Amino acid sequence: MPLKHASLFARARHALVLLGLAALAACSPTRGGPVPYNVEMKAPDRPVALTLDSDYKISPLDTLKVTVFQVADLSGDFEVDLTGHIAMPLIGNVKAVDLTTAQLDARITEQLGVRYLQNPDVSVGVKESSSRVVTVDGAVTAPGVFPITRQITLIQAIAMARGTTEAANPRRVAIFRQIEGQRMAAAFDLTQIRRGQAVDPVVYSGDIVVVDGAGNKALYREIMGALPVLSIFNPFRF
Image (cartoon, rainbow, N blue to C red; front, side, top):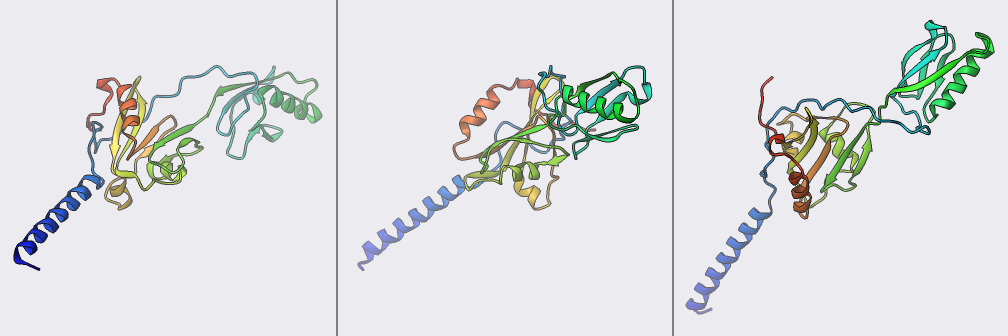
């Protein structure tokens, strides 16, 4: 090859290498964005009590108020356990999950009337609904709203959405949460969490988890545009 052509070829190859490196650098996962990192997130506000429809089906971890007229020892608040039962005096475990309050009322009335009371007057109400869900969106395989019945972490929440996609930027994952009446946000580096270099934060009911990735810019802009300026987290100490 002539010397002149060889020199041109070498310069062209060098230029292509530099372009390739620049492209990789542009595509490589990085931190960034308006949501701050390395902050402690407070627990969310307690959920506001909602008016439940008459056909509401009782769920695990709901708190029920059972009143047996003129029998204080049988009345009180009872939490539905993870197996779907409440533990009542005299009659023991009573299945409550997937029943309406009227259906559970009839069941308790029947069981008390069989052996213990004559014509018992029972009323059942939902004192606190445990409809607990977490929303996972962005660059995950199966985005959606997922019910939770126990405390989970960010890694577990993303696993419920079947993990991140190939287009995900695991170094920029945001959690949005309602705290002190405002929607607040903090960013987390999933890569560091997986390596044990950062704490895996707790995710609470009502949280929205968004994984950054190609094609998610509009989603981020939509969420961030709905946030008051003061609701973005600043670092704080306990």
